[in-house]
Every structure is written in structure tokens, then in C-alpha cells.
Image (cartoon, rainbow, N blue to C red; front, top):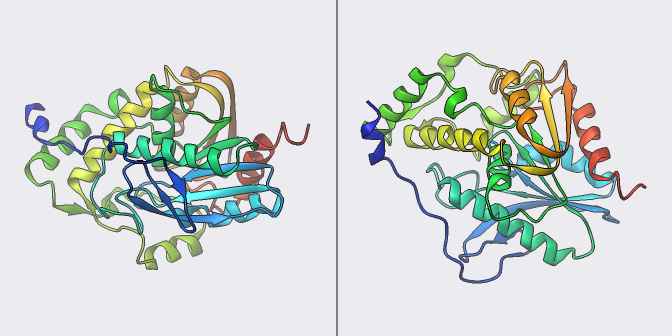
Length: 296
């Protein structure tokens, strides 16, 4: 039944044309394509963050935590990843190799712009899956640490077989058809004001193409598999009330990680940990963790 899924393919990684660099309001990636970037700059930076948003979101996902981090000496570069927000190819799945290549480009650009400062990646949901998948690659991810906030690891063997068959068939025969996900009835956060603002924000993506839905499912599966190979200094943030990515799957992925791994659990945390009503705790914990060495 899954044979038809072979017809669904996504772009290969971009070809290297020039060294990546952060310009005034964008990342110029390795192939010369510009990704809109929002920067929250600290007055006296002690650490640098490359921030990756979740599915259908964009850089504004980090407006709340990045402002708090800037006040503590952390400068954040939040990307609009390809296919999302103000980025190129809006609404179309860019492929996991491209997302990972852009992450590596952003890290290289951050190192070039801040050569003496530690560089971290903070990935939320889909962004966490991109970071985790990159960590699991043979090519190293040149960072001082990675924060995985509610990482999207509900894929591959962790997702029920029926779901995988259904999305593969749907994306094969109707790739451009869109779905809203409203039937799932899942709530991403307890912050109703944030939910209303997201719903009214024209930069957010609403209905999702079925081939893009298949793309995120495949990425989640890759992230799950990568958790067995990924190692380094890693902070995993888990909301016990998360209705989007099952907390048990995040815990299972965290147990497979190697290196200096810390897991923080928030009983009042939902999926949008950095935008929940109780966002102060995960926001502060991430800053404490990133600034540990800077503060002695």
C-alpha cells in the first residue's frame, strides 16, 4: 500500500555557491537564497542563538523568549525557514536536506559574525526535529549546544501505521490539497491571546498542503531515528500538557541521546512552551543553560 508513496519526492539539498552570511535582516544561505531573519540583539552579548520555528510558524515564534534572552546577554537570530513565513517557497515543503543545510549555513554565519562567542541552536517542534536530524548526521553540527523545545519526534516507528499509510496515500494522489487539522481538536497552548494572535497573523500558514504534511511526518521519523546517533550538550524541554507531540515520545527520544543531556519537565507546559502562560520557567531555564559557562 505504501508503494505509491515513492511518487512523492522533495527537493535535494541546495548546492554551495558562496559562503553564508547574516545580512541586515536576512540569512544568505549557501546557494545565495535569502531567508528573512529577525534579530533580537543583546547590548553586551555573551552567547548567540540560531532559532528554528515550528511547522507553519515563522521567526515571530521567538519574540517572547528572545526579548527575555537579550536582556540577559543572548543575541538571537530567528529564521523564517524555507517554505514558511516570509521565506521563499511559502507553503511548499522544502525537504529535510534543505532545512538542515540552511541550519548549518546559519550556524556558519553566526560563527563568522561572532567568532569568540558560543553558538547555540534552539529548535521548537519542527525546528527541534531539524536540529536533531542534523545532530544525527555524519557531518557534525558546529555548535556549543542544542535546545530541543517540544521536539517533533512523533514520526517513523513512533507514529501509528494507519496514520503513516493514510498520509502517504493522500499526499501521493492529492499533494496540493490542503487540510486545517481542526478535526484533531488539539490545543497548542493555554495562552488564548497568543492563539488568537496566531490565527489573525497573515504570515502564519493556515491550511497545510498534504505533501507538506507528509514532509513533516518524514522529518519527524528522521529526527526519531537520529536521536540514537545524536550526541553533544543538549537540553530537552518537555511540557506535560503537550497535545501536539506526545511527551512520552519526547522522553523516549531523550533517553536515546548521548553526551551532556539535560531534560526539563514542566507540569503546566503545553506545546508552545515559550509562549504559554507559564513560559517564564522554560525561557529562564534555557538562558541559564546557555549562559552556564559564561557565568562561571
